[in-house]
Image 1: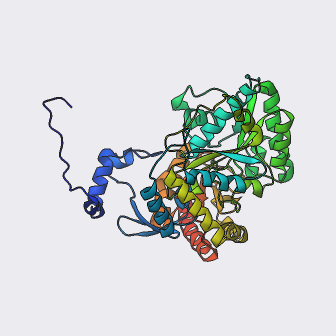
Image 2: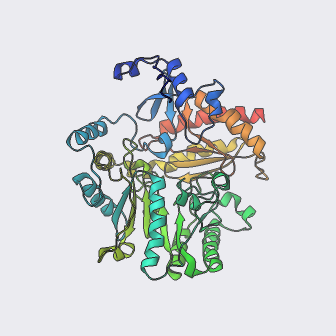
Length: 478
């Protein structure tokens, strides 16, 4: 602003009371003028169509600014596992903020971070005992990437810097994490990204034939795992630092691991001195029925990255949990990991995480998921009678429904058709029908569901009925 310009005075009152009473029109105007949404087309607001504004959550429901009620079929963004409106989590946050609102864990510590690190270490498998906090999942993955490279340098093997991940996998948006992410369309506008990321086939058994494999699901698991060994050998074991895998791959539509897959991957990593990272930003804290999904699938990684549901979204936090082997070089002398984040291990977030884990234990949320996941699957599989539904897959409370043009041939939609189907119809139609979920085309078109862990069969039926109505209408529009 030049010296002759005058500041623009807001046309609305300030203060908490005023904020609580703002109209829909005021909020839409403010959003259009100033809010830059993430992973979104700003043209939606520029066109005057406006953006859905969510104002309240309770249990597994959310409400918009017009007062309409929806099922939260995605837990916000795979986050609100304990459900909305948990007063005790808000009260813990307020109490901690009054006592110690902030202090860094850069050469200092505070009780909440110490206690949470201890809690996570006891929940994690094997000797994954060391917890490096961050403020979110992308940062946790970035931490693991940097730590893997540094670890091998400290071992006198500096050429081990490459990382392997799977096709279409999403591992975050920071420059390092983006190198691990396996979605070309998310990377091309930011090239050149950090070098060293290489891709192998994912575990989408529904599309196994297109990957060049025919056989049983168990055999496919071994085939997919062996592609990791093939890539390590092609690049040279002396150059590969780590393999990053989600227990259930999110992007592409919930690819669970075939039987034996992770056991074979662990063997390969051990054989070639490669670190195995279980990226559980989505899968940890009950989404697959255990605190950590690697326990569900019976493998022990060298590192776990986690975030989202650690606090059920009531405050941001992330963590990279590492085993004693990876931590060992940092126990001695002047070696330090020169990496960190101002708000990592935040006192309020750590306090909320501890209380959230108390809720998990008191209400048996992991056991609830284990007991009800088969019912959730069976309910969603009723949709297989629809001509547009090609596959229902997933695990725990995390499922994807792949949409196809032809069930017999598994023919998918081209880019234009997918655009019209997902963004042109399904996203809005599902929302209008009272279900917030994700219609996703990172890969073949899918609908993803990851509701709060508190729901059960009655809610499964309600979700299925909404999906049935909207997908039936979608088919008539093709």
